[in-house]
Length: 329
Ligand SMILES: C[S@@+](CC[C@H](N)C(=O)[O-])C[C@H]1O[C@@H](n2cnc3c(N)ncnc32)[C@H](O)[C@@H]1O
Image (cartoon, rainbow, N blue to C red; front, side):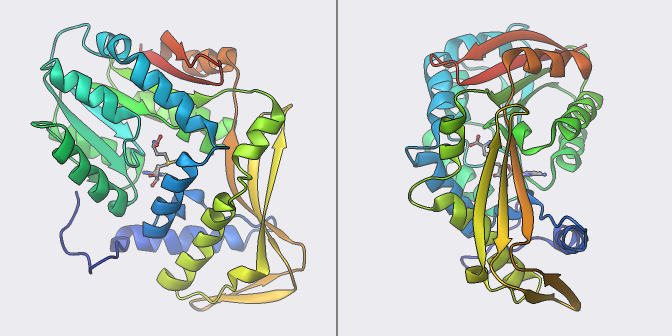
């Protein structure tokens, strides 16, 4: 739950999350093929940069999913409310609820009986979201849960035994390798009861150039977003990265559907984080984030292989993005 005790303007991680942050950063940087965990992109600056990425012309994902949530709101709401009971509408990695707010407003106007439970590792974005929803949707029952997906899902289950509808939007599932995504969906299924629903937002395979450009915006926002993690490590983990000595590099492989962000070291350098020293060679890359793309068939298969049945797929008019309902069996 969100605490009120943050110093002005800053949302540091709580002690548990900070310990995990340090552990995951150091273990990723001590690997032979270095990597950093992208879930830590989202501090206050990262949240602001991601909001700007969502609004930039190359990042088509937001407009596609917004179109679905604005034009198919009644269809989505009908599936959610089809059994007339009360429910918890849980959103994993809710961010600022740019898309889901349309559904929340519709359900609220229809007097559906539900609690909205946004889960996010960023306390900052949850505070932005909570304030905005309280201002804009009168009477909406909101319980913010700050932390990791499954830890917070467990708390959500302790708070209420109602039917669960879990939204995982914005192609967040794409930020996992396909093998991890399968494991994640199996874990998600294990946290649900038969009949519970998942609404999964997935970015679809399309012309490779469109995909590559979405992560190489001309304003350089994605580059800043990636480099911001180095600033965050400096500030929160006592690091001494020189972010000017790293460059963002993006790849997209149309065969596998893997779109990957890297940071490349521009010189031989040694970086200190707390008591640890990490050696970077010139041109050595650090893997930052995957944004995996799927076909509609692969999305259905993912559901079937992980304990769900696909019940309704709602693509945007261009066929670039899909929001798919899965039912837990
Ligand atoms: C790409 S943004 C998408 C936000 C929102 N779903 C949307 O579609 O606009 C990802 C969000 O998920 C959150 N997040 C990433 N990894 C997380 C994790 N392991 N547990 C909880 N939240 C996480 C981030 O803080 C961020 O707000």
